[in-house]
Image 1 (cartoon, rainbow, N blue to C red):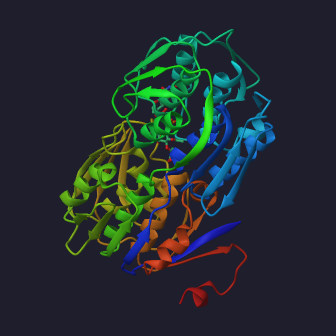
Image 2 (image 1 turned 60 degrees about the horizontal axis):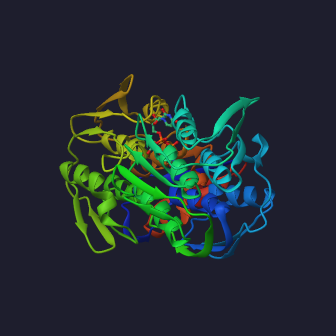
Image 3 (image 1 turned 90 degrees about the vertical axis):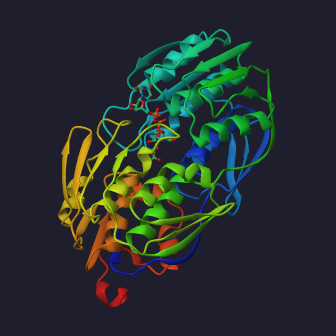
Length: 428
Ligand code: EPZ
């Protein structure tokens, strides 16, 4: 078992480069299953989620490997299996994209119900509704979803709720359907646009991605090509909040500032200076932090994936902040860990009420999911004394070189196995 050991109090200063978007890369890697030819995808973050997906493609009979730093080369020309068992996909939520990709390619997919972070119920009814609209039928047996169609036929699909995963799955399957599909109430996240651009560059015909109506004219085949993943909006946001939390001055490079608007607006409201460049943002935090209200919403609203991080920050802001989680029904599990560090937070259903305290105190804490893990690190960076963050498997799913990047900004953080002795000496 490993842990992070953080000595709080260092101001983060300097520059950091943001990696490619994890949530986009995981969709693109799976989308490559539908391509007969070689796809070269660069700016892919080397995190456990992208490694696991490469492994799954290899097990299905395709070829996927990192051929250079951040470059994955995928050839699924001879991929011949449409069944992904629980042993293959249990670790990773994005495995749900296998349903759309395998269905598109083989008109048949058998995929174990997805794993990933646990924020309460994670239904796939909207994914299945989209496949049904395209003419597929499905059944579930021992956790394996079996979806098949004689042929996929383009159709209108209305999403009852905005869903990133269901929108991507519908785009995948519809790209290789006959005729035209129109997805209404589609998700608009940056990675939806990235998936559409990737598929279009491989021969698909998708219009409107990034708006709530996406029109897809099915094509009979997709061809190989090369593509570059967009910058990771959530990693960038995590560093913006970490800079603000430590009273730092950090330039965050390789970002699309527009994707960060909702966070920038909140940080400015809190008294943080945010300076936007063409592909960077600079965070200067030299004033006391003010309370704010945050409502998580689908893009372009404030992202749920930056909710734990801003709660950590608000735990030391002046006054009472209110954070409402509108996307997931149970994404406050990590708050018990923050309260171990002295945060004053009460949760009632989807609402967290945060009474700012002067300082957090270092403590052993556990990371309960990917973004909660990042929030624990932020809390540790600003706390008095030493914080140990356990359960790193979640953080490893989505943050590339997290420790190295934070160290580059002056953070006092190390990663080590739990048996290590002399940790205070090492960190000092
Ligand atoms: C994606 O998950 C992201 N994952 C999540 O990021 C992110 O939290 C989420 O979108 C929301 O932005 C990836 O991109 C791999 P949804 P996804 O379908 O697609 C309900 C992270 O930390 N819903 O948009 O699974 C669902 O219960 C991860 O990087 C249904 O009701 O999320 C939720 O309340 C965690 N039926 C809401 O929609 C369905 O069939 C949004 O979920 C599907 C979803």
